[in-house]
Structure formats: structure tokens, C-alpha cells
Image (cartoon, rainbow, N blue to C red; front, side, top):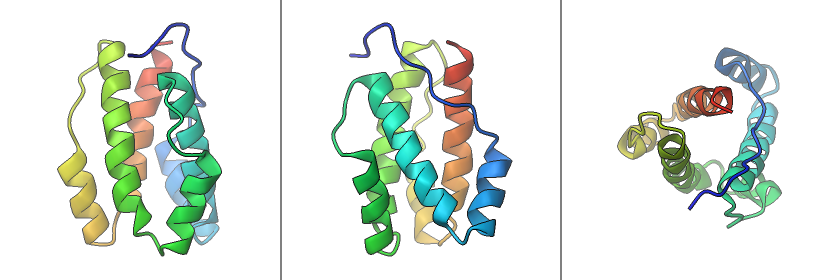
Length: 122
């Protein structure tokens, strides 16, 4: 159950997330994973894994941890969307397919867009 008051996260332009991730050879993506993990955990009150550890696991597993992270963040995003009266699509299959084909960065764009919608409801 999401409790009130909930802290809002930072609005980020999804296109900028993509551009900065490419320009920094993925370093910004790892920072983004840690930041989003912290914001989402704070919002839902569920700190299951330390945000820095999420980024580290993504790095040391050469991105394989992203499969699990995308699944987990999708579940939390759905809870957040429902709590704010927003449509809560289950994008799990989409995220896993994009990860499988090596274009999981698209997931970050979709996830950031959903987060921006949630933050704008605050």
C-alpha cells in the first residue's frame, strides 16, 4: 500500500535520458537507474534493494540484471499509477522483449515517461 504523503521524484526529459546515456557510454544510464530506484522506493515505501546496488548489479552482470530490474520497476510503476488514478499498463512482456533484443534503453524512455506522468499528478 502506498502511503501519503509521497515524495515526488525529479522530472526528466526521456529524450535527454537517451542522449546523455549515449554520450556518456552508458554511465548516465547507471546513474539514472540508481536515481529512479531511490525515487520509486521512497514513493512506494519499499526499499527492497539499495539504489547504488541496483546500478552496480546492472554493471557487473553486463546488463543481465536489467531484465529483473525492468520487471521489478514495472510492478512498482503500476502500483504508483493506480494510486494516482492513471492507467497502469503491464509492460513486463514489452520490457523483457526489448531487453532480449538488446534495445532495453527504450525501456528507460517508457519508464521515465510514466514517472513524469506520476510526478505531474503531485
